[in-house]
Length: 251
Image (tube, rainbow, N blue to C red; front, side, top):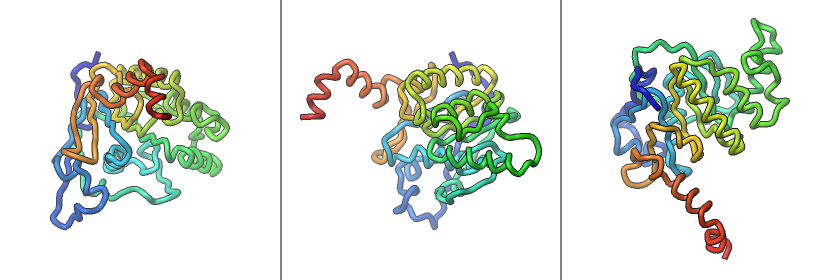
């Protein structure tokens, strides 16, 4: 399904200076200590792994290094409700492709409320066109978390863009996750590139995607096929043998 094309981002290189304390997070992660770079698929790259493996931290560093606000939004968003992002972005170098970026968004589940609040604040100041009109015209705070999340993806993502998504499935039902998969496909056909950290076996099923599994042990980074991921294997085992799995888990 995926075709060869030029990337907006080709890879993320790690800058390893002598004064970096590799005993502290995130520089202690095998991802950083064992690797010099992470390459991206020109259309869609997934990062998966257990909590603490560094996938969200890496995604945040990529987004901030590219010029996005740490709490999310477009390249034009500049707000901060809580300065909690790591300094990893200061130690990465992004290698860009030759394509011209016409759109972009950093979407993260944990700070989406803050993004919605920032949009309302900008619109209340009455400077320029209403920002919320680009998100469907209805206040994101007046919708459920899942509805507002999907409204942003459906209305604000326009194509020919770089979209960095951190656990987008967090607010979405299984049906909406499948709808998101379809929307991602539409945007890829509109010459877009996605970099996504996820736990969703639905999203990971996208044909031809580049999937990296991150770990806090070993080399920290391994490329693998969809059927090899823990998310696919464990989900399949549970669904196919759910009674036996429940007996084990609840004994």
